[in-house]
Amino acid sequence: MCADEGKVAVIPAAIVEDDAAIWLVRHCPVHGESRERVCSDPELYRRWMKYRVEGEPQPLVRTDASDGTALYIVHRSQPLLIDLDVTNRCDLRCSQCQVCAGSSGVVYEPSLEDLRAWMRRSRALAPGCPALQISGCEPCLREDLLVLVREAKALDFSRVQLMTNGVRLADDAGLCQGLRQAGLERVYLGFSGVDGGVNPLLGRDRRAIENLREAGLGVVLVSLLDSRFVGGAGRVVRFAMENVDVVRGVHFQPTFSCGCPWGGGSGSRVEYGELLRVLKGEFAGMVAAEDFYPFPVTFAVTHLIEGLTGVPQAKCTAHPMCGGSTFVFLDDGRVVPLTRFVDVDGSLAFFREQARRRGPMRKLRVATAFIKNIDTYTDYRKAPRGFDLRQLLRDAALAGEEYAFRRYQRSSFFVGVMGQQDRRMLDLDRLQRCVIHCATGDGLVPWCSYTALGFREKIHRQCSVPVEVWERQHGRLLCDDARVELARGG
Image (cartoon, rainbow, N blue to C red; front, side):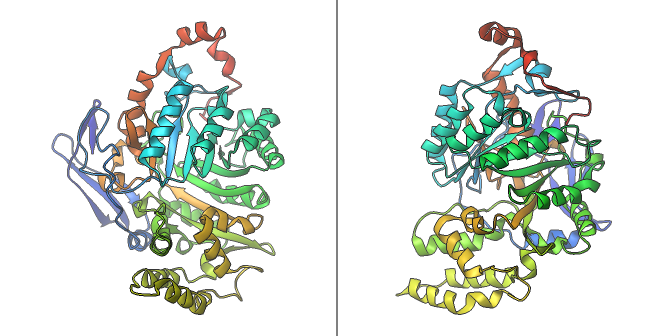
Protein backbone atom coordinates (compact mmCIF):
# COMPACT_ATOMS: atom_id res chain seq x y z
CA MET A 1 0.00 0.00 0.00
CA CYS A 2 1.24 3.48 -0.89
CA ALA A 3 -0.49 6.66 0.23
CA ASP A 4 1.10 9.77 -1.25
CA GLU A 5 -0.63 13.13 -0.71
CA GLY A 6 -3.82 11.37 0.28
CA LYS A 7 -3.94 9.10 -2.78
CA VAL A 8 -4.15 5.39 -2.07
CA ALA A 9 -2.58 2.84 -4.40
CA VAL A 10 -2.08 -0.91 -4.18
CA ILE A 11 1.57 -1.81 -4.81
CA PRO A 12 3.54 -5.08 -4.84
CA ALA A 13 4.98 -6.21 -1.52
CA ALA A 14 6.46 -9.31 0.05
CA ILE A 15 7.14 -10.73 3.49
CA VAL A 16 10.84 -11.61 3.79
CA GLU A 17 13.22 -12.79 6.51
CA ASP A 18 16.44 -10.82 6.76
CA ASP A 19 18.81 -9.72 9.53
CA ALA A 20 17.12 -12.10 12.01
CA ALA A 21 13.75 -10.38 11.57
CA ILE A 22 10.61 -10.52 9.42
CA TRP A 23 10.01 -7.54 7.15
CA LEU A 24 7.28 -6.18 4.90
CA VAL A 25 9.17 -5.07 1.77
CA ARG A 26 7.25 -2.72 -0.54
CA HIS A 27 8.07 -1.96 -4.17
CA CYS A 28 6.56 1.37 -5.17
CA PRO A 29 7.09 2.49 -8.80
CA VAL A 30 7.17 6.12 -7.62
CA HIS A 31 9.02 6.01 -4.29
CA GLY A 32 11.16 2.92 -4.75
CA GLU A 33 11.72 0.11 -2.27
CA SER A 34 11.05 0.49 1.45
CA ARG A 35 10.54 -1.90 4.32
CA GLU A 36 8.95 -2.05 7.75
CA ARG A 37 9.80 -4.57 10.44
CA VAL A 38 6.94 -6.95 11.15
CA CYS A 39 8.52 -9.11 13.86
CA SER A 40 12.00 -9.31 15.40
CA ASP A 41 11.44 -12.97 16.33
CA PRO A 42 11.27 -15.11 13.16
CA GLU A 43 10.54 -18.24 15.18
CA LEU A 44 7.52 -16.54 16.77
CA TYR A 45 6.33 -15.42 13.33
CA ARG A 46 6.60 -18.91 11.83
CA ARG A 47 4.86 -20.51 14.81
CA TRP A 48 1.97 -18.04 14.78
CA MET A 49 1.47 -18.34 11.02
CA LYS A 50 0.77 -22.07 11.42
CA TYR A 51 -2.59 -21.09 12.92
CA ARG A 52 -3.79 -19.26 9.84
CA VAL A 53 -7.34 -20.27 8.86
CA GLU A 54 -9.66 -19.17 6.09
CA GLY A 55 -12.93 -17.48 6.95
CA GLU A 56 -16.14 -17.30 4.97
CA PRO A 57 -16.59 -14.42 2.49
CA GLN A 58 -18.31 -11.36 3.93
CA PRO A 59 -19.68 -9.53 0.87
CA LEU A 60 -21.29 -6.70 2.87
CA VAL A 61 -18.02 -5.44 4.41
CA ARG A 62 -16.30 -2.53 2.64
CA THR A 63 -13.23 -3.55 0.63
CA ASP A 64 -12.20 -0.11 -0.64
CA ALA A 65 -10.50 2.99 0.68
CA SER A 66 -12.55 6.07 1.50
CA ASP A 67 -11.78 7.56 -1.95
CA GLY A 68 -13.28 4.50 -3.67
CA THR A 69 -9.96 2.84 -4.55
CA ALA A 70 -10.55 -0.92 -4.74
CA LEU A 71 -8.24 -2.78 -2.36
CA TYR A 72 -9.28 -6.44 -2.56
CA ILE A 73 -12.16 -8.52 -3.87
CA VAL A 74 -13.99 -9.75 -0.78
CA HIS A 75 -13.54 -9.56 2.98
CA ARG A 76 -12.53 -12.89 4.51
CA SER A 77 -13.48 -12.62 8.20
CA GLN A 78 -16.72 -12.06 10.08
CA PRO A 79 -16.68 -9.36 12.76
CA LEU A 80 -16.05 -10.36 16.37
CA LEU A 81 -16.36 -6.77 17.58
CA ILE A 82 -18.38 -3.85 16.21
CA ASP A 83 -16.82 -0.48 17.06
CA LEU A 84 -19.12 2.53 17.41
CA ASP A 85 -17.28 5.88 17.20
CA VAL A 86 -19.61 8.29 19.02
CA THR A 87 -17.72 11.59 19.48
CA ASN A 88 -14.50 13.49 18.90
CA ARG A 89 -14.93 15.57 22.03
CA CYS A 90 -12.38 14.90 24.77
CA ASP A 91 -11.72 16.00 28.33
CA LEU A 92 -7.95 15.86 27.78
CA ARG A 93 -5.96 18.46 25.91
CA CYS A 94 -3.03 16.64 24.33
CA SER A 95 -0.49 18.73 22.46
CA GLN A 96 -0.01 16.22 19.62
CA CYS A 97 -3.64 15.25 18.98
CA GLN A 98 -5.07 16.12 15.56
CA VAL A 99 -8.35 14.25 15.89
CA CYS A 100 -10.27 15.72 18.82
CA ALA A 101 -12.65 18.65 18.42
CA GLY A 102 -10.30 21.08 20.12
CA SER A 103 -7.63 20.44 17.47
CA SER A 104 -9.71 19.81 14.36
CA GLY A 105 -12.06 22.80 14.75
CA VAL A 106 -15.19 20.69 14.25
CA VAL A 107 -17.33 18.59 16.59
CA TYR A 108 -18.15 15.08 15.41
CA GLU A 109 -21.06 13.74 17.38
CA PRO A 110 -23.64 11.69 15.46
CA SER A 111 -27.19 12.00 16.66
CA LEU A 112 -28.70 9.30 18.83
CA GLU A 113 -30.99 8.45 15.91
CA ASP A 114 -28.00 7.93 13.58
CA LEU A 115 -26.19 5.76 16.10
CA ARG A 116 -29.33 3.67 16.63
CA ALA A 117 -29.59 3.12 12.89
CA TRP A 118 -25.90 2.17 12.60
CA MET A 119 -26.21 -0.33 15.45
CA ARG A 120 -29.36 -1.89 13.98
CA ARG A 121 -27.80 -2.14 10.55
CA SER A 122 -24.61 -3.66 11.94
CA ARG A 123 -26.63 -6.20 13.92
CA ALA A 124 -28.49 -7.16 10.74
CA LEU A 125 -25.33 -7.44 8.66
CA ALA A 126 -23.37 -9.28 11.34
CA PRO A 127 -25.94 -11.33 13.27
CA GLY A 128 -23.29 -13.59 14.80
CA CYS A 129 -21.14 -10.75 16.15
CA PRO A 130 -21.12 -11.01 19.95
CA ALA A 131 -19.70 -7.64 21.00
CA LEU A 132 -20.06 -3.89 20.60
CA GLN A 133 -17.49 -1.33 21.71
CA ILE A 134 -18.50 2.28 22.31
CA SER A 135 -15.49 4.46 21.56
CA GLY A 136 -14.43 7.86 20.32
CA CYS A 137 -12.10 10.47 21.66
CA GLU A 138 -13.98 10.25 24.99
CA PRO A 139 -17.44 8.64 24.87
CA CYS A 140 -18.16 9.46 28.53
CA LEU A 141 -18.79 13.05 27.44
CA ARG A 142 -22.02 12.04 25.72
CA GLU A 143 -25.01 12.74 27.94
CA ASP A 144 -26.89 9.84 26.34
CA LEU A 145 -24.13 7.26 26.97
CA LEU A 146 -26.33 5.16 29.27
CA VAL A 147 -29.07 5.16 26.63
CA LEU A 148 -26.58 3.88 24.06
CA VAL A 149 -25.54 1.05 26.35
CA ARG A 150 -29.14 0.05 27.04
CA GLU A 151 -30.05 0.12 23.35
CA ALA A 152 -27.02 -1.98 22.42
CA LYS A 153 -28.11 -4.58 24.96
CA ALA A 154 -31.65 -4.45 23.60
CA LEU A 155 -30.22 -5.28 20.16
CA ASP A 156 -28.83 -8.46 21.76
CA PHE A 157 -25.13 -7.68 21.67
CA SER A 158 -23.98 -10.22 24.25
CA ARG A 159 -21.10 -8.00 25.40
CA VAL A 160 -21.08 -4.20 25.41
CA GLN A 161 -17.81 -2.53 26.35
CA LEU A 162 -16.53 1.02 26.66
CA MET A 163 -13.17 2.44 25.56
CA THR A 164 -12.27 5.44 27.74
CA ASN A 165 -9.44 7.51 29.20
CA GLY A 166 -11.11 7.10 32.59
CA VAL A 167 -11.16 10.77 33.62
CA ARG A 168 -14.95 10.93 34.03
CA LEU A 169 -15.06 7.51 35.66
CA ALA A 170 -12.49 8.67 38.23
CA ASP A 171 -14.45 11.81 39.03
CA ASP A 172 -17.95 10.30 39.03
CA ALA A 173 -18.52 7.02 40.86
CA GLY A 174 -22.22 7.33 40.04
CA LEU A 175 -21.47 7.07 36.33
CA CYS A 176 -19.71 3.75 36.94
CA GLN A 177 -22.76 2.46 38.80
CA GLY A 178 -25.06 3.71 36.04
CA LEU A 179 -23.04 1.99 33.33
CA ARG A 180 -23.18 -1.29 35.21
CA GLN A 181 -26.93 -1.01 35.70
CA ALA A 182 -27.40 -0.17 32.00
CA GLY A 183 -25.74 -3.45 31.05
CA LEU A 184 -22.12 -2.54 30.33
CA GLU A 185 -19.89 -5.63 30.58
CA ARG A 186 -16.37 -4.30 30.45
CA VAL A 187 -14.35 -1.07 30.54
CA TYR A 188 -11.24 -0.77 28.37
CA LEU A 189 -9.20 1.84 30.21
CA GLY A 190 -6.31 3.72 28.63
CA PHE A 191 -3.38 3.07 30.96
CA SER A 192 0.09 4.38 30.13
CA GLY A 193 1.95 2.77 33.03
CA VAL A 194 2.58 2.74 36.78
CA ASP A 195 5.27 5.43 36.74
CA GLY A 196 3.88 8.90 37.26
CA GLY A 197 6.55 10.31 34.97
CA VAL A 198 5.23 8.18 32.12
CA ASN A 199 1.57 8.24 33.09
CA PRO A 200 0.41 11.69 34.23
CA LEU A 201 -3.10 10.25 34.73
CA LEU A 202 -1.98 7.55 37.18
CA GLY A 203 -3.85 9.06 40.14
CA ARG A 204 -7.06 9.28 38.15
CA ASP A 205 -6.52 5.77 36.75
CA ARG A 206 -6.36 4.41 40.29
CA ARG A 207 -9.54 6.26 41.28
CA ALA A 208 -11.34 5.04 38.16
CA ILE A 209 -10.34 1.44 38.91
CA GLU A 210 -11.53 1.79 42.50
CA ASN A 211 -14.89 3.19 41.35
CA LEU A 212 -15.25 0.36 38.83
CA ARG A 213 -14.38 -2.17 41.51
CA GLU A 214 -17.16 -0.78 43.70
CA ALA A 215 -19.57 -0.88 40.75
CA GLY A 216 -18.68 -4.50 39.92
CA LEU A 217 -17.39 -3.67 36.43
CA GLY A 218 -14.34 -5.48 35.08
CA VAL A 219 -11.44 -3.51 33.59
CA VAL A 220 -8.99 -4.20 30.78
CA LEU A 221 -5.89 -2.00 30.89
CA VAL A 222 -5.05 -0.71 27.40
CA SER A 223 -1.38 0.22 27.31
CA LEU A 224 -0.14 2.09 24.24
CA LEU A 225 3.54 1.36 23.69
CA ASP A 226 6.38 2.84 21.73
CA SER A 227 10.12 2.26 22.04
CA ARG A 228 10.41 4.81 24.88
CA PHE A 229 7.95 3.07 27.18
CA VAL A 230 8.05 -0.63 26.30
CA GLY A 231 10.44 -1.25 29.21
CA GLY A 232 7.56 -0.61 31.63
CA ALA A 233 5.29 -3.26 30.12
CA GLY A 234 6.11 -5.82 32.80
CA ARG A 235 5.20 -3.39 35.57
CA VAL A 236 1.78 -2.89 33.95
CA VAL A 237 1.23 -6.65 34.15
CA ARG A 238 2.30 -6.64 37.81
CA PHE A 239 -0.22 -3.85 38.48
CA ALA A 240 -2.89 -6.10 36.94
CA MET A 241 -1.79 -8.93 39.26
CA GLU A 242 -2.19 -6.64 42.28
CA ASN A 243 -5.73 -5.76 41.17
CA VAL A 244 -6.80 -9.11 39.76
CA ASP A 245 -10.18 -8.89 41.48
CA VAL A 246 -11.21 -6.14 39.04
CA VAL A 247 -8.62 -6.20 36.21
CA ARG A 248 -9.58 -8.84 33.64
CA GLY A 249 -6.65 -8.31 31.31
CA VAL A 250 -3.88 -6.19 29.86
CA HIS A 251 -4.08 -5.24 26.21
CA PHE A 252 -0.86 -3.87 24.73
CA GLN A 253 -1.30 -1.69 21.65
CA PRO A 254 1.92 -0.81 19.80
CA THR A 255 1.96 2.69 18.36
CA PHE A 256 0.64 3.46 14.90
CA SER A 257 0.13 6.65 12.91
CA CYS A 258 -3.47 7.84 13.00
CA GLY A 259 -3.37 11.52 13.90
CA CYS A 260 -3.71 10.76 17.62
CA PRO A 261 -1.06 11.56 20.24
CA TRP A 262 0.16 7.97 20.35
CA GLY A 263 0.83 7.85 16.59
CA GLY A 264 4.59 7.52 16.69
CA GLY A 265 6.90 7.29 13.70
CA SER A 266 8.17 4.01 12.30
CA GLY A 267 11.31 4.27 14.42
CA SER A 268 9.25 4.30 17.62
CA ARG A 269 7.04 1.32 16.75
CA VAL A 270 7.23 -1.71 19.02
CA GLU A 271 6.66 -5.15 17.48
CA TYR A 272 5.68 -8.37 19.18
CA GLY A 273 9.12 -9.90 19.63
CA GLU A 274 10.43 -6.89 21.51
CA LEU A 275 7.44 -6.72 23.85
CA LEU A 276 7.54 -10.44 24.67
CA ARG A 277 11.27 -10.26 25.46
CA VAL A 278 10.53 -7.48 27.97
CA LEU A 279 7.83 -9.59 29.64
CA LYS A 280 10.12 -12.63 29.77
CA GLY A 281 12.79 -10.57 31.52
CA GLU A 282 10.33 -9.05 33.99
CA PHE A 283 8.99 -12.44 35.07
CA ALA A 284 12.27 -14.39 34.98
CA GLY A 285 11.04 -16.89 32.41
CA MET A 286 7.67 -17.52 34.07
CA VAL A 287 6.15 -15.86 30.99
CA ALA A 288 7.76 -16.27 27.56
CA ALA A 289 6.96 -15.88 23.87
CA GLU A 290 6.06 -19.58 23.72
CA ASP A 291 3.11 -18.91 26.03
CA PHE A 292 1.46 -16.56 23.53
CA TYR A 293 -0.75 -17.83 20.74
CA PRO A 294 -2.30 -15.84 17.87
CA PHE A 295 -5.98 -14.97 18.05
CA PRO A 296 -7.22 -17.60 15.53
CA VAL A 297 -6.03 -20.39 17.86
CA THR A 298 -9.65 -20.52 19.11
CA PHE A 299 -11.01 -21.45 15.66
CA ALA A 300 -10.75 -25.22 16.20
CA VAL A 301 -12.90 -25.03 19.34
CA THR A 302 -15.67 -22.85 17.86
CA HIS A 303 -15.64 -24.83 14.62
CA LEU A 304 -16.29 -28.05 16.56
CA ILE A 305 -19.04 -26.44 18.66
CA GLU A 306 -20.75 -25.12 15.53
CA GLY A 307 -20.63 -28.52 13.89
CA LEU A 308 -22.13 -30.28 16.90
CA THR A 309 -24.83 -27.77 17.77
CA GLY A 310 -25.75 -26.48 14.33
CA VAL A 311 -25.72 -22.98 15.83
CA PRO A 312 -23.49 -20.45 14.00
CA GLN A 313 -20.54 -19.41 16.15
CA ALA A 314 -18.42 -16.27 16.10
CA LYS A 315 -15.24 -17.82 14.71
CA CYS A 316 -11.95 -15.93 14.81
CA THR A 317 -10.27 -16.02 11.40
CA ALA A 318 -8.08 -12.96 11.89
CA HIS A 319 -4.63 -12.95 10.33
CA PRO A 320 -2.23 -14.51 12.87
CA MET A 321 -0.05 -11.39 12.92
CA CYS A 322 -2.97 -9.21 14.00
CA GLY A 323 -2.05 -10.23 17.52
CA GLY A 324 -2.03 -12.85 20.22
CA SER A 325 -2.48 -13.46 23.91
CA THR A 326 -2.08 -15.82 26.83
CA PHE A 327 -4.07 -16.50 29.99
CA VAL A 328 -2.12 -16.40 33.22
CA PHE A 329 -3.16 -17.72 36.62
CA LEU A 330 -1.94 -16.57 40.02
CA ASP A 331 -1.15 -19.47 42.33
CA ASP A 332 0.59 -18.88 45.68
CA GLY A 333 2.29 -15.80 44.28
CA ARG A 334 3.40 -17.58 41.11
CA VAL A 335 2.52 -16.50 37.60
CA VAL A 336 1.41 -19.64 35.76
CA PRO A 337 0.44 -19.31 32.08
CA LEU A 338 -2.26 -21.69 30.89
CA THR A 339 0.22 -23.10 28.38
CA ARG A 340 2.48 -24.43 31.15
CA PHE A 341 -0.03 -27.09 32.18
CA VAL A 342 -2.32 -27.48 29.15
CA ASP A 343 -1.05 -29.07 25.92
CA VAL A 344 -2.59 -26.47 23.62
CA ASP A 345 -1.44 -27.98 20.33
CA GLY A 346 -2.39 -31.51 21.38
CA SER A 347 -5.88 -30.44 22.45
CA LEU A 348 -6.40 -28.45 19.23
CA ALA A 349 -5.43 -31.48 17.15
CA PHE A 350 -8.00 -33.46 19.14
CA PHE A 351 -10.73 -30.86 18.44
CA ARG A 352 -9.91 -30.85 14.72
CA GLU A 353 -10.08 -34.65 14.64
CA GLN A 354 -13.50 -34.63 16.31
CA ALA A 355 -14.78 -31.93 13.93
CA ARG A 356 -14.03 -34.27 11.00
CA ARG A 357 -16.22 -37.05 12.40
CA ARG A 358 -19.26 -37.92 10.32
CA GLY A 359 -21.97 -40.53 10.32
CA PRO A 360 -24.67 -41.75 12.70
CA MET A 361 -24.49 -41.02 16.42
CA ARG A 362 -21.82 -38.42 15.76
CA LYS A 363 -22.58 -36.36 18.86
CA LEU A 364 -22.46 -39.41 21.10
CA ARG A 365 -19.15 -40.56 19.65
CA VAL A 366 -17.63 -37.10 20.05
CA ALA A 367 -18.91 -36.84 23.63
CA THR A 368 -17.45 -40.26 24.46
CA ALA A 369 -14.08 -39.30 22.99
CA PHE A 370 -14.18 -36.01 24.89
CA ILE A 371 -14.86 -37.68 28.25
CA LYS A 372 -12.20 -40.31 27.63
CA ASN A 373 -9.39 -38.10 26.33
CA ILE A 374 -9.69 -34.45 27.35
CA ASP A 375 -7.96 -34.73 30.73
CA THR A 376 -4.89 -36.24 29.06
CA TYR A 377 -4.06 -32.75 27.75
CA THR A 378 -3.69 -31.23 31.25
CA ASP A 379 -0.85 -31.78 33.69
CA TYR A 380 -2.79 -31.23 36.91
CA ARG A 381 0.40 -31.41 38.95
CA LYS A 382 1.43 -28.04 37.45
CA ALA A 383 -2.06 -26.53 37.27
CA PRO A 384 -3.44 -24.07 39.83
CA ARG A 385 -5.64 -25.56 42.50
CA GLY A 386 -9.20 -26.11 41.32
CA PHE A 387 -8.46 -25.91 37.60
CA ASP A 388 -10.72 -28.18 35.53
CA LEU A 389 -10.19 -28.17 31.75
CA ARG A 390 -13.25 -30.34 31.18
CA GLN A 391 -15.52 -27.87 32.99
CA LEU A 392 -13.88 -24.89 31.32
CA LEU A 393 -14.52 -26.29 27.84
CA ARG A 394 -18.06 -27.28 28.79
CA ASP A 395 -18.74 -23.70 29.93
CA ALA A 396 -17.16 -22.33 26.75
CA ALA A 397 -19.41 -24.54 24.63
CA LEU A 398 -22.52 -23.43 26.51
CA ALA A 399 -21.86 -19.72 26.90
CA GLY A 400 -18.57 -18.73 25.28
CA GLU A 401 -14.97 -18.15 26.32
CA GLU A 402 -15.81 -15.06 28.39
CA TYR A 403 -18.20 -17.01 30.60
CA ALA A 404 -15.88 -20.04 30.83
CA PHE A 405 -13.16 -18.08 32.62
CA ARG A 406 -15.51 -16.29 35.04
CA ARG A 407 -15.03 -18.97 37.69
CA TYR A 408 -11.31 -18.06 37.65
CA GLN A 409 -11.71 -14.28 37.37
CA ARG A 410 -10.24 -13.57 40.82
CA SER A 411 -7.13 -15.60 40.03
CA SER A 412 -6.54 -15.15 36.29
CA PHE A 413 -6.40 -12.56 33.54
CA PHE A 414 -5.24 -12.35 29.95
CA VAL A 415 -2.22 -10.56 28.52
CA GLY A 416 -2.61 -9.68 24.86
CA VAL A 417 -1.04 -7.62 22.12
CA MET A 418 -2.64 -6.32 18.94
CA GLY A 419 -0.66 -4.42 16.32
CA GLN A 420 -2.86 -2.05 14.40
CA GLN A 421 -1.82 -1.20 10.87
CA ASP A 422 -1.17 2.24 9.47
CA ARG A 423 -0.43 3.38 5.94
CA ARG A 424 3.30 2.72 6.17
CA MET A 425 2.89 -0.98 6.83
CA LEU A 426 -0.63 -1.84 5.69
CA ASP A 427 -0.72 -5.41 4.39
CA LEU A 428 -3.86 -6.30 2.42
CA ASP A 429 -3.50 -9.95 3.38
CA ARG A 430 -4.07 -8.84 6.97
CA LEU A 431 -6.65 -6.17 6.21
CA GLN A 432 -9.09 -8.51 4.46
CA ARG A 433 -9.09 -10.73 7.58
CA CYS A 434 -9.81 -7.93 10.06
CA VAL A 435 -12.35 -8.99 12.72
CA ILE A 436 -13.01 -5.52 14.20
CA HIS A 437 -15.50 -3.64 12.05
CA CYS A 438 -16.67 -0.05 12.48
CA ALA A 439 -20.38 0.76 12.30
CA THR A 440 -20.86 3.75 9.99
CA GLY A 441 -23.43 5.32 7.72
CA ASP A 442 -21.43 3.80 4.87
CA GLY A 443 -21.76 0.26 6.23
CA LEU A 444 -19.26 -1.96 8.00
CA VAL A 445 -15.66 -0.80 7.61
CA PRO A 446 -12.60 -2.83 8.77
CA TRP A 447 -10.93 -1.03 11.66
CA CYS A 448 -7.57 -0.48 9.94
CA SER A 449 -9.36 0.97 6.89
CA TYR A 450 -11.31 3.26 9.19
CA THR A 451 -8.22 4.68 10.90
CA ALA A 452 -5.58 4.44 8.14
CA LEU A 453 -7.39 4.88 4.83
CA GLY A 454 -9.50 7.97 5.35
CA PHE A 455 -12.87 6.55 6.45
CA ARG A 456 -12.77 8.18 9.86
CA GLU A 457 -12.10 11.60 8.33
CA LYS A 458 -14.88 11.02 5.77
CA ILE A 459 -17.44 9.94 8.37
CA HIS A 460 -16.43 12.77 10.68
CA ARG A 461 -16.94 15.32 7.91
CA GLN A 462 -20.42 13.95 7.24
CA CYS A 463 -21.50 14.22 10.88
CA SER A 464 -19.62 17.31 12.11
CA VAL A 465 -20.42 20.94 12.77
CA PRO A 466 -17.96 23.79 13.38
CA VAL A 467 -17.06 24.28 17.02
CA GLU A 468 -18.73 27.69 17.18
CA VAL A 469 -21.99 26.20 15.83
CA TRP A 470 -21.90 23.42 18.43
CA GLU A 471 -21.26 25.98 21.19
CA ARG A 472 -24.27 28.08 20.12
CA GLN A 473 -26.48 24.99 19.96
CA HIS A 474 -25.44 23.81 23.44
CA GLY A 475 -25.07 27.19 25.14
CA ARG A 476 -21.56 26.54 26.45
CA LEU A 477 -17.94 26.49 25.38
CA LEU A 478 -16.18 23.40 24.09
CA CYS A 479 -13.21 24.17 26.30
CA ASP A 480 -15.43 23.47 29.33
CA ASP A 481 -14.91 19.75 28.54
CA ALA A 482 -11.22 19.96 29.33
CA ARG A 483 -10.07 18.69 32.70
CA VAL A 484 -6.43 17.78 32.08
CA GLU A 485 -3.68 19.34 29.96
CA LEU A 486 -1.09 16.83 28.72
CA ALA A 487 2.03 18.01 26.93
CA ARG A 488 3.14 14.49 25.97
CA GLY A 489 -0.23 13.34 24.78
CA GLY A 490 -1.37 10.91 27.46
